[in-house]
Length: 150
Image (cartoon, rainbow, N blue to C red):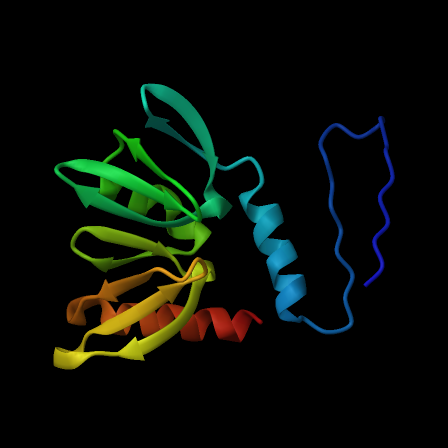
């Protein structure tokens, strides 16, 4: 893959053009990075506010009425409700997988079946989370849609 970057001070806004012969997973990841650029969540950890890049979020879970934002190495807290986050992050490939959890489908490494029509999703950091049977079809549909984009 060849990369060319050129500074152009005459532009009003930054501009990215991607040329490709075939839409590969690597090219799709470039699209995701560009789509999510500048998308951040304001979260707290140890009384310090952090700006968390949406593309770094694995999943978000409600625990004790607080939304916990999980990244590869850390957990942060946000005061934004899960339903509000679901609305905001829907275009960023986050979907609900249980009553209390949203997942970034780009961060799912594998999926396996469990008892009672549930699934286990292994995340890119090796952590495993449960997909409830009610949301199983939604996750499967979202992954099929994503596969069509690739």
